[in-house]
Length: 191
Image 1 (spheres, helix red, strand yellow):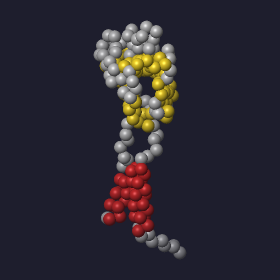
Image 2 (cartoon, rainbow, N blue to C red; image 1 turned 30 degrees about the vertical axis):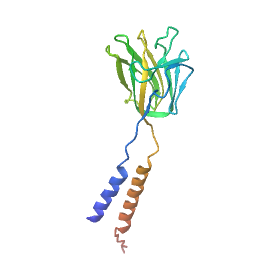
Image 3 (cartoon, rainbow, N blue to C red; image 1 turned 180 degrees about the horizontal axis):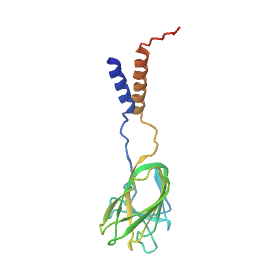
Image 4 (cartoon, rainbow, N blue to C red; image 1 turned 90 degrees about the vertical axis):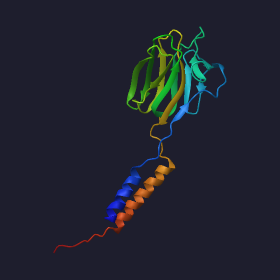
C-alpha cells in the first residue's frame, strides 16, 4: 500500500507545474509625444504603416496611436514578437462610434484573420487567446478617428519550464525510481 501511495505522490509531483507568469507590454514608460520609426520593446517591435506613432494618455494609460498625416490614429500597425506568444490580449481605445478592428497574423497553425466590433464602446478588450504560437500581427480599422493600442498581455509559447517545475519533475522521477527499486520482483525459471 505504501508503494502505491509513493507512486501516486511521485506522479502528482511530475504533473504539477508552476504557474506561468504573463508578460504585459504597456507604453507607460514612454514620454508623451510623437515617435518616428518603430517602437521596440524586448518582447516585440511595433511599426506603423506611416512610420509614426503618438504616445498619449487619452483613453488608456500611455497607449500608442499609429499616426496619419491628418494626425489621427487610423494608420495600420504591425507587431512582430521576439518569440511566439499564447493567450494574447490587448486593449483598444478611441473608437468613433461603432467600428471594426481587423486583425490578421501568423500563429503556429498558420495564417489567421479575424475582426472585432466595438459595439460603440470607447474602450474595448481584444482577446486572441484562441490562437497559439502567435509570431506577428497586423492591425487596421475602419474607424474614421482611428484606434490606440495598449496592454499587450501574453504568455510565452513553448517556454522553458521554471526552476520550480524542474525541481518537481526531478523529485517525481526520483520517487518513481525509488518505488521501482524497492519493488521486490521474483524471477523464476521454468524447467
